[in-house]
Length: 332
Image (cartoon, rainbow, N blue to C red; front, side, top):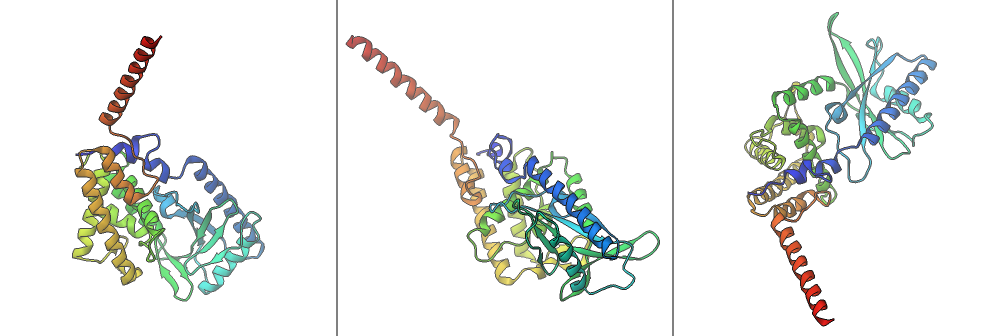
């Protein structure tokens, strides 16, 4: 059986090194986030609007962010009113507050007011999504977050609790961060597939939940087997039952966020991925196995020559070289 763990993770130019945000990009995002936070707080204060605080969420908080092929990487930074709003405005109103405040920040392009967040595109080539929450107190110790969704009102949503759930899933597996890597591989695969597919793969949140719930950790340090077998179990599960429960909100079925056409495309793309993974893992040649993975993961996946092939080429070069030297010597 071929072992492409080095192609996935340990080699200097591994797939993981190419799909993961490097330290420079992470620091740029953090710096921009902190400065934008300070600007929004200042704007809200000057306009006598409610006090706000921020909480990182999404893939950046879960440490599963990937470097997208289009280069437009991002973070989600939740804005929370504190304490809860006494007279709650409409989602449209609070979205306008954030959009107007962000528009006056000097290093951004015009903000985009989306249904569930305000997107702030930076001229440097990345963006920050700002979902807006009101914290509704249950008692002296607890408050529930409600997300401002344009057209739908204020909807319960707890991304901080979701991050805690994922961290708990990671802690269950003593595997040197392999679960997080498998999530990154799955999201990077989806990004590659989305370049050529009319119907997009489901969002990173759904992929993360599926990977965490079906993670196959019986393969030691072999990321290729862990990734391939996790994808296979995800597919088998969805063939049996296509529901995808929100792990921190039992009333929400995340399958409802996916159209039938999108889901069918996802299942077909998964089928092809799993078939290629099986072929690659069962291959005797690691070079040929890597070529099979590259079909599904794109040019960022490296292919190395098999050791025997490299030795043969080296031996052949030495033999030819020696023959030339002998012939040249006899001619003189």
